[in-house]
Length: 154
Length: 154
DNA sequence: ATCCCGATTTTGATAAAGTCCAAATCTGGA
DNA sequence: TCCAGATTTGGACTTTATCAAAATCGGGAT
Ligand SMILES: [Mn+2]
Ligand SMILES: [Mn+2]
Ligand SMILES: [Zn+2]
Ligand SMILES: [Zn+2]
Image (cartoon, rainbow over all chains, first blue to last red):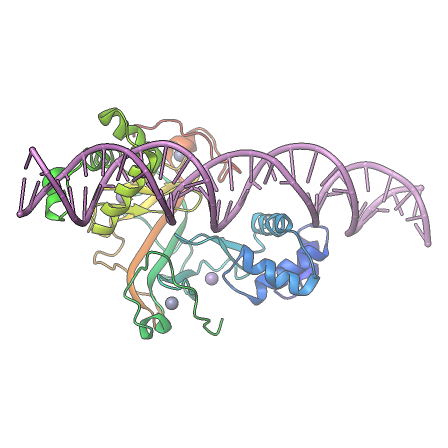
């Protein structure tokens, strides 16, 4: 994210402290949840309501400034890497999420064999597995309740 | 699902009316939600608690007898077509869900370019778009609130 | 520099989907 | 037929997110 302030202006969005703080938090914590982004934004602003975080995340997502991903068994996550049709690798145990470049190249990167007459606009791919850290920790596969994250490097 | 009763016994699960009813409902309503399955099961049983539907769906899923899919902005959906690594085509407007055979063939059908050291066990693919019916209805793309389903052929 | 309207933020209530818990009931082997 | 353990049930509870209305703020016009 080059310049958050001008990014907002380019999209005809009034510049507010809350929007700048959320944008900063998203940039610095890729794939963070709304709660994590709230913590990040508060570190900058001092205070911001939970509803404002959702308001901002929604308007930024609608404008295409950030991207929302919604893996199973996880609250939504956000990132500012948009427009490149990349995919994700998610740890079943701790939820660690990594970017994976598109499996085929173009966007949409995949075509369904039989599209059933649908007009497809996106092929979303999620690779599920165990991150190196959870493998070492000897986690078997999918714990009933996901383990508390064991702080990777972020 | 050949014989629900013997399927349960094969997995060392006591046979109960609730399990048979849920299994029947899942078989007859592919990609149905827990609520829809509850309606189906009640048509058979007369009565079954919401918690039992969840209990049954969870054990059946754990045993691999049925499969759970969790597309964004939708409650979980269930199907008895398991073990063939197929993917899904989901309508952004009405949620209609169709099966799509694996894009590449094997299972897992895709390999991430850079697996970041993860041990990948599944590549989940969801194609997002508009079903033929919603295209005809002139739905633009992603309505704020998904439209009420306009009853396709199920 | 000040005013003002519409957009944004805030607070608090509400919704949707699913889990937790303990009491009642049922299943299947003895 | 009996019984221990598994299952079912009703109700409270949790998590994630939205809704609604009042208070506040941003930025173009004066
Ligand atoms: Mn990403
Ligand atoms: Mn399917
Ligand atoms: Zn992990
Ligand atoms: Zn549709």
